Each structure stands twice: as structure tokens, then as C-alpha cells.
Image 1 (cartoon, helix red, strand yellow):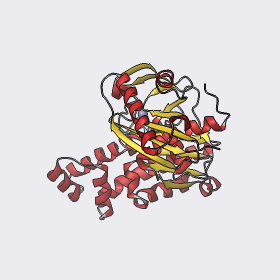
Image 2 (cartoon, rainbow, N blue to C red):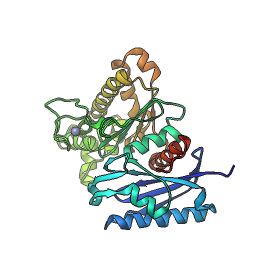
Image 3 (cartoon, protein in one colour):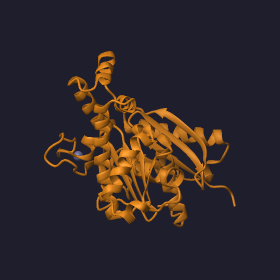
Image 4 (cartoon, rainbow, N blue to C red):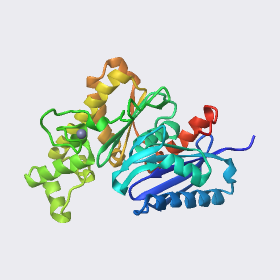
Length: 326
Ligand SMILES: [Zn+2]
């Protein structure tokens, strides 16, 4: 049998990552380009150029590419591949699947980017071998994806996995973008760590963070982690708090879903065990003991490659299910 290939696209607000992989998910070729900020058709044109460049560099024929998956930062109708809105790019009401299939002459599958990142980690990253996963990304916000029985779980209207909006401080804490108070996102995201870091710097509770603020005019989540690692008690308190809310929330979810793995990604997960340990400790405290014994909490492995690989998995799923060209 001839080798088959799958293409995956991760559409971000500032860059597009695309790759081609084999049927088993081995990357053959990858490419990154800036995202055109004008009309959405400009973006589709870049998709087309990129796939032709990838196919040519990989010296394969376009016929052997069995489809294209796309992860988008959007609210969408997943089955129809219809995008209601991408706020960052000013897209509204775009029939992405339909238009892309005509343009590329290939079957196309669309899902949101948190879900494709989760699928990428399941297929080729930290989740390999697991069929029940909770994936969470701690970045500017908190993103999440649920994989149950080896496939993404979408819920009634595609909003399943919005772990960032689990309430952890009802009626206190900060106001979230979603309009509620005290969401996991407002208490544990990199933005939250920055906010609380600045607070203790300005209050004089953390001399090293005050120094950072004086020198650079800003505090990042990495600064908070760095000074905590060097022994700063006030910064450590922020991380303990973050670990408490994340561990508690993941324990509640796990008591309901009984996952095999919990994959934590995003910039701060690079701090490794120093960031993970408070989460694991609280998880163990609040999850049922059998649930906590089964669920391994691990850092994500693929970084920003998870998105396109997970998008390519959407093609893999379809081909494995009989290869309908719908
Ligand atoms: Zn919220």
C-alpha cells in the first residue's frame, strides 16, 4: 500500500503552523508563517501556499495527502466546520470547511484549538497510551480539552472542557472575561500570577519582585516562579495558592471523569516539578484515593506543535472510520 499522509493546521492570531505527518503521526515536514490580518480569504490563500510548499519539500504527491485538519481559536459549529466568530482576526460567519475543501480539493475537518492541542498530546505527546485525558493549558487564560474514550468530548454545543471557568472563589476574587467572579482562570492563569505578583511587589512583601518591577516596569509569571524558587516566601504563597485552586479543580473533575492522565501545558508548565508539585499535593488531597492513584499529572510535551498534530489527527480519525469524503 502507498503511504498516506495527513495535514494539520494550527491557526493562531499571530502565526499559522502547518505540518504533514504519516498515518502514525510522525512529522514529515513543518512550517510556520505570520497570520495575514486582513480578509479571511487571505488566510485561506496562505493555507494553500503552505500546503503546496510542504508537499513539494517533502517530495510527496498531493494525492497522498488524505485531508487537512484545522484548529481555530473560535466559537464554531464543529460538524459543519462553520465559524461564528474569531474575535482576534475579525472573522465572522465563515464556512471554513466548505471553502477550504473547494480551494484545496481535499477533505477538511475543523475543531477549536484547545481541542486540537489536547488531541495532539494524546496522539504524540504526554498523553500517549491514554484514552481518558484532561488537558489544561495555563497561559494568558486557562484552556482545556476533554478526551473521553479516545476522542474529544464536545458537549451539547461544543463548550465542554471550559475548565478555566470553573468557579473557585465564588463572589470574591477577580472579575473574569466571561462576566463571572473568581473563575479558575482569574486565580491561576499567567495573567493572575502577574497580577498577584505585582500586588506583593507594590506592597513591599517581596523585595526581589519589587526589584524586578523597578528594573523592568513589569512582572511576569516566570518572575514569580523564579523568585519563589530562590526562596521568596511571598511569591511561594502565590504558587501555593495557584496549586491549591488547580489541584482542587482537577480533583473535582477527576472524581467525575476518572481520567488516566492530566496533561498540563502552557508557558508556566516549563517550570516542571516546582510548579507541578503543589498541584499534585492538592489533587491527592481532594480526589478519591483510587481516582488519584489512577490519574498521572504530567507536563505537556509538544509545546506549540500539539495544535497542528492534533488537527492532523482529525483526518486520521476520519480515514480510520472509513474515509468518507464528506
Ligand atoms: Zn470565567
